[in-house]
Length: 306
Length: 185
Image (cartoon, each protein chain N blue to C red):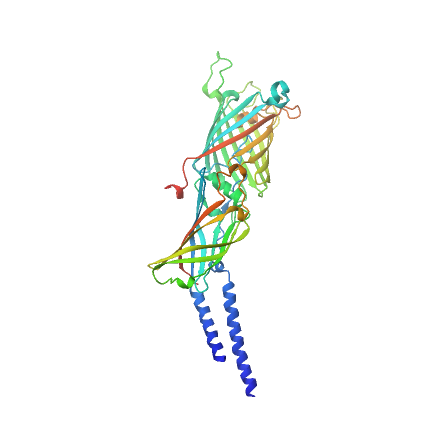
């Protein structure tokens, strides 16, 4: 059957042709980049757990980047229960002016001057563990802060032998924090404040406190923040209270404004933890805000020559 | 007819073979972008772009990891990732396209070859058509591909808040510069 034979061989050739066409086509559709294979699973640091280096008054698990200087103004008005005569607290102002500088991406130092007690505080903040993403990375951040606060008021009793060291208080703080998701970050802040001098012999020099701070991101530019310090019982006098602050972070595009309500006027760790005596129930609440302006003093390597 | 088909098939087979050979790639292509306004200049560099060119078809792809962009100012970088490109949600930007006049480029011969390309750019989860021009420079066996073009942020649903309208330009200039090497499997 010559006809059949010719048909068969023709069809074989035709199929071969079709097949070659198809294979050419499948080649062209291949994902070219997949040729390079999977990218190595790079470890990546988790960033922006908080918008700022402060949750509200307390330090957050964020630091300024290397070579960046942050000028930060913390401002608290008077108590809102002062009534209309005090413009609901707006007549009074307590501030802390501070400079924070990133020596590296893990080490930050800062100095601040508070109007409250004319205190100067100096601290260093070191990120020992950085929460990461990717294979083998650690799921939390661990940061240590060590600082000293100097009381700047005149001695209340000049007759006494007043030592310079009596002006000093020290604090050690660890921040154990995790950015659970884009929306939610939480940190624990066990803190020890040591005061060189205390009012009476009954007062303790060492105050232990456990802080907690968190953030819930509502939108890309708006976040809810809160922080609270629980002072272990029977350490401070009965008039002392635990500082609780609730606020919002507003990102305007260039800056972060932090607005909040708090029962604490302290803006360094000593005064925040051991000097708070406002009560939320009685309305001893202060409205406050933090603003900051950053300056890049030292550019990253790839921009050095520009 | 039969002969014709056989010849064609062989040709195709040969072309597939050639296909596998004539690919060029890079893992450290440089991609920069520039947003320039009288108020502020924002530029960033990424030196880890990957790309593959298939010479026989003219198809090529470019992939950029958003997290690998470096900025002069740390705050710019934070805003870039957090507020503009949302790099946690959209970690990569990928261009897939074709060089229309690939046949005019001889990768084995020194020369400067202008090319036209068209394709699609995926950025911030949005895919848009993108056409442009580029140049291949072959010198002493080194193949350099470069291009620059302008994209509109609004095309890719990247919003600029009204407060910084004067500081961030909607027109962003992109430059691409990559040295390709022959791909061997």
